[in-house]
Picture 1 (cartoon, rainbow over the protein chains, first blue to last red):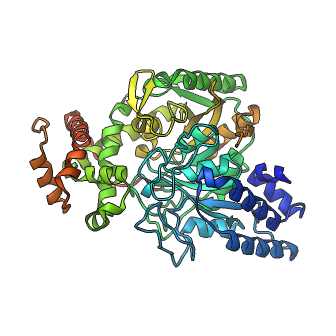
Picture 2 (spheres, rainbow over the protein chains, first blue to last red):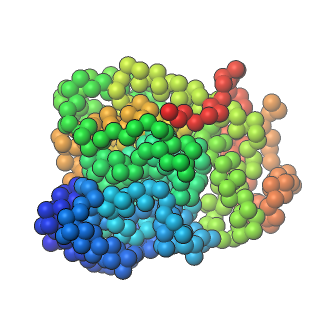
Length: 471
Length: 62
């Protein structure tokens, strides 16, 4: 039964529906694994053992009574610890909210509950989601499971989500993505995840970092699992005025495995061309594999992306400081140092800077739209480097050295600014055994095509099936 | 736009006080390199020829 913990959410849902696997047995197996491994991995902030077992028994009883909520009935998952969960503390990875227990679920958690999923626990993260390394001074730094001997970062801010899924501690998770916080840990931990279009998934009940850049999305070992979860999560929510009224397609049905004729634009300048050599080679090989499968691949350059760092900074720093100003004035010492310093930088951004950043946003959005006018998806590395060692300060890229933090968010952040959907999938490993991730970027609200491309790639490769060796 | 300024401790103290933060000189001194990098980045944003580009003042929600 140890194999159970490595089954995909879709497989588990099928086995549960056929009564071949008990949700209770599954939750027990996962809790045992968490107890054995998470002391080192630090992927959970709160493990909900009793509540999860109780929910599993209820799911089993429903099943025995002939009531199945859907293909995810009885499947456990972990929300990043910034999704409000009724009766379960939601810390945001912070000391400030260490004892905060929400009275209601966030919309997404409620919807996944309606779909039959069970909350196994709340997952670790960079404090208040403000950092791409996934570090946490209060609950411990998550350990990337792909290197048992050296403490490498998991990527963030959804670090616990990346680690827990990659290490087989839970089959699926929720992350949030403001500058890459779903796709970066997916890339560094060798799993899959999608940042949907801005407005596709409700952010109601999710602690904000930057209202206009935050996206909520699923993380799992397969794109097919992400499609199932996204289908359950997405759609209009009166509690989030930015959500779209567009109907939610059947994402799972869109996974045909077919890419014949799919027009793929490989992003060169500012993306693939400046990635570390092993990352560049893996993404080039993936583009060739797609071509061999019938996709039509050409090369694209986005020039406005050069201005994304400054514009994104101005927007995120301003919005983050607006949210945190009260706590920062009253409880500055309770923030971990890097987050406190980053938040303080928001005080240097003027109203003029903020508006100019929104002008850049318009240019970037228009340029990505134009690139997608003649293509179905764009393809790029998700991160320019594999998982760095904890404390590593500099990364060597194709166009010189960069601080690690800037390097990690460089390829993902443009699509937070533009709002386009982007799905990260594993596309190889370095010689040292670290995962490499790439991202498919699609037209607004066309998650179906993005997911189809990622799933089709996974049907032809086995990168996503590899498992880390855990000491 | 004015050219980017070198920021000293007094200036930084004024800026943070204006934002409502009462931080020690040691704390402010520690963030000066980050402040300088931030000001350089914002100066690049100021220098962009954005002309009459309409800012993205609304979410693109359908």
